View 1 (cartoon, rainbow, N blue to C red):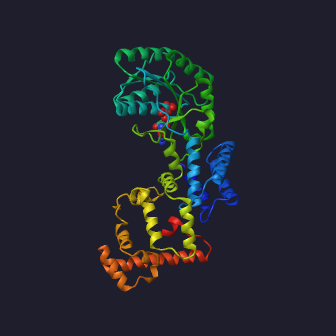
View 2: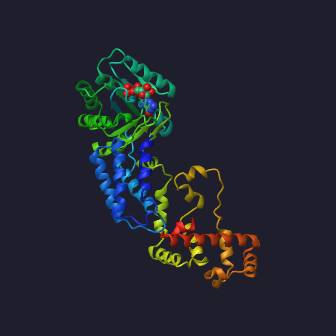
View 3: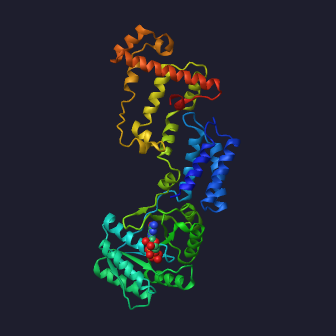
Length: 440
Ligand code: GDP
């Protein structure tokens, strides 16, 4: 799903890598690349342009803090905009009244019948409801049979009248049947056509008028890109539906429909379908979808936590010390403490894209810094501020005080030294080693 868009966005962000700060110049090419990626994913040009205009504006206004790179900051800005574009928060299904009526509409082949089955299954197994599926496709007997098969698989009753050629009448009868039968949810699967068609629209509109549904869900195949968006517009004008269901997201879909339907028709996507199996229905969360598109763990939270923890003044002071080759154990300890304040170490690492998957079975203890802190703690303040004076006999004393072996202290001193060498090198070549990056 959205692989190509994800890759393109990723390479757009990489353009900002190594840049010390976000400027008018370096943001321009990234933003242009993001716009191209969106357009190629079937996002309408105007929407893509408005989107990247907002991204540019935000990027230039944002406080760039030293603990995160401009590339990471850009990812967060784009993610926030993607979430907004897709509707912000998730939209709940209105199933409060008893019975609640849900009308399913869309083109033939969009996945209406499959979705009706999935929804019935979802409401039955996850919400404890007793749904009734209604076959209101009066043109295709095969559609009725298909629904019957699905109903049997999930143990949900299917209402149908094979001889009745009046969809409105079938829907009304089904409602009466549901009330008698104690069904608290009625899902009406209507007929679709291959293209938007007046007869079909009128029929669905008549069913709507007759049964006054709580929800009208428009089902659309995400593989159809811009067509999906145009079809949504046509259906919405006639039916004023309450939500969208995007199907076939498991396929090689480019993403345009998911990204722009909400913006275009001002109706939320409520569900996505990612397969033919009846248990693959997903509630649509704009946030999670954005994260998937960006191929990220949860960099948002990581960045937010960093922004909350690292104060700009302190960061500047640190940067100056690094530049003057004065980074000492006191600074190191301070950095460790700030990282710890950001949260559980394993959780933090899992927020880094790609890392979550890699470390999921590895035990990473929250005490990872304990030994290091103990060693720094058993140094005198003078030693902490002057790492170079720590000789053999001082090391012995530090090891004893920290309950460590002399080898541990030696190894730590060596690592610290390597880190300082690296900082020196970065200074020499003009790159500023700052905050977390200096530690990594
Ligand atoms: P309808 O004509 O709108 O009722 O569409 P159907 O429910 O009959 O679906 C049309 C075809 O798409 C069928 O072959 C379904 O198995 C398939 N289909 C439906 N939803 C999905 C989905 O989310 N992913 C995939 N891969 N196929 C789907």
